[in-house]
Image (tube, rainbow over all chains, first blue to last red):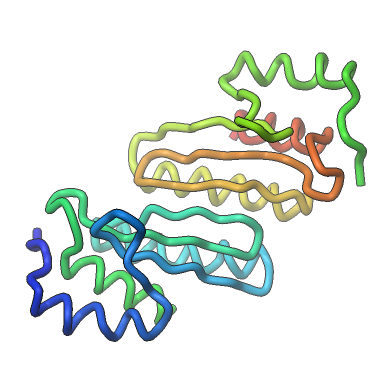
Length: 96
Length: 96
């Protein structure tokens, strides 16, 4: 379990993510990003890798997929907003 | 390629699906269903099986996942509405 991000942690953890295309979700303490892939196979293959990490870390995304597009939203329901686990999963998703 | 469903085909193909929990999507010529699973692993495992069929048949869902819930919407973009491919994929999704 981690805590809701402090203002200082937001600066250090979220700023680098905003540079890779993550943004604050509208009206929520959550971050969101849209990934585009070559086709469905690439998109779902990426989701499968991300799903393994999500399950391993017991921290799951809200996400939707239409053909080659995957929209991801990350937040920590147990703390009612963003925690360091969201930043960690976001970095992993960018790295995959 | 298939055609947009005729009124008669709608009766015969969609009626059985409406009995298993599918419904017309709000404001679209599309069908939608929400599947609930035990947990994330079950939900994503089901998505993976469904993804194989979607790719095999080159007919892909719009779907979103939050933990143990998967919301699916099916329509045929190339015909601008429902085709027999949507009914076929819906039946497969129920069967998996």
